[in-house]
Length: 485
Image (cartoon, rainbow, N blue to C red; front, side):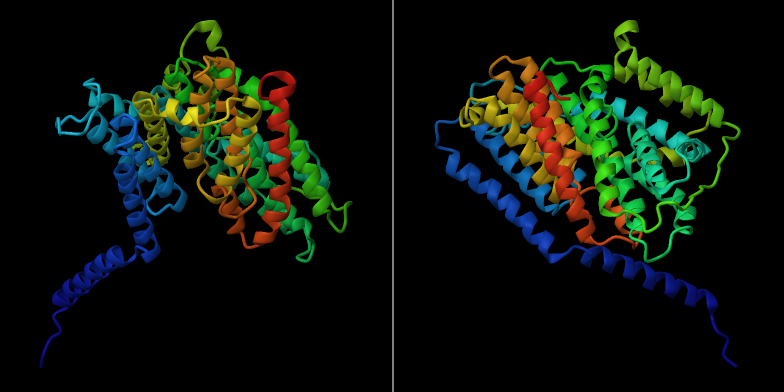
């Protein structure tokens, strides 16, 4: 009688599983992505070939090739966005700093660049600021104060459909000013589950309840420097050219636009998806703050208060961001597993954008490009705002900001106009958050789309209108008041 050797069977199954994983790792890359990656690098190579004998300095030609490569990789997403950021930093070190002292590389005038300057964006103060924001959000979600506050605030708005939708949008917008838009959207959509049970399946208002949440999350991305990655890119690059934007200054510039866009979006969605029965009463579940939630709230409030009063106490916003970092990690509220789960790829992407802008400035390519742009902010400001909304509709809004913010700010600094540089930096950043006309335009849109209630056409019909209104308001705000609303 033959006995079955179970140990060998288990080992064989594990071997097959490992082979399957390797096969998936090899063939999970789409052929189209391979083509676009190859096309991007070839395009950058030909930029060098055709421009090398031009009147441009060699470092400007090399930087142009890096810029073209980054643009194509970010637009096509042939590589992960954060991987492209690493490509940018690596090429700037090799081609511009030239630590290997290779011929034809480095600065044409013999200036030696320290390669560390291109690594510094990874530890830029704005990265620490954003990390502090991440930990605030992570701790809030972990102890449940996000759901507790949201459910209690929602009851303030009453039970009628119009007010419930306004409440959902206002709370989502408020949370998105301080938390990840993705986390806020996921949380708020979860909170709508009890509300959905009170609405007939054929009532179009169901779409409004889902659609209003990602739109409000995107709009909330305008409110603070930590609300969205494009904001961090703008603050970081403005800082690199000697323009410091305080936390309160940003809010004073962007919050009015955020408030108006929230009301406009609410009215638009209500008109498009009005419920069949406006008299129905809708009630949400209640959640309570427990245990460590009170401590997290104290740290949260202290941090925000310090951010808003930085002009009084003099502490930089990035230093203040250490309050939640220390407050949560030393008390074990944020554990190693929590820290590992943070969106580090976003921080790398922001660093890549800052490094790209630094390369443009260091090589003088920004000045060369600006010479080809019409010398009028009557053209450049609306052109960049429109370009940002269009690009951000089809690609990552952070990647679009990484490409356009350095160009806009370089245009303004070429005329020593710090006010215009601030307007362009913030204008492009807030415009990036206003692109929401496709399910793929923003992660909050994608999360809402996955709920299974919406179709692409629902995003297009309302998102295009919201984007056009936002463009008009941003441009009008600049001309009417001399700064972004």
